[in-house]
Length: 201
Image (tube, rainbow, N blue to C red):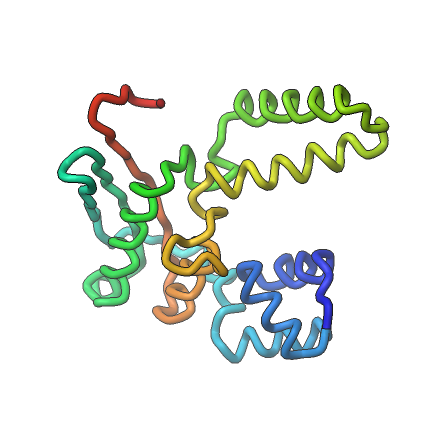
């Protein structure tokens, strides 16, 4: 059956779970929101939302160097306990995030971390493009919203498609690890270095 984006959004708002996990739960529940929530709760994913306030002061700083030393990444990933920080799953996740950053060069962890100036500048460009293309005013904002979403999926780490499995986002991958560990896990910060390219380029 076809699952609408509105239904997926409603389930995401209720559970805080990633897009693909919500879509799959809705498919399994034939579009029934309550049953979808139950499916996610049974998987332990829907509880993630309750963990967000808990302090994540443990974790790892992982590095990744690519192309014979031409690209390097440092990323800090935090969790609540030293036990989780030392697990193979957590280490693997942190290394994969460093690799993702090296490959995709995001400029922020999430849309909320982007500067207002960048977002407004992009909106203005998309608005102007739509108007130049002769689109009516009533659809311009929808076009801007759609293009902005695509922009986020390119430059915001959590919104990006995972390079090892493009069917899920980094946020989905993060939520899977949260569900597995039962802890609040945060990608706190990262730095990406490319030989001969100044910072911010």
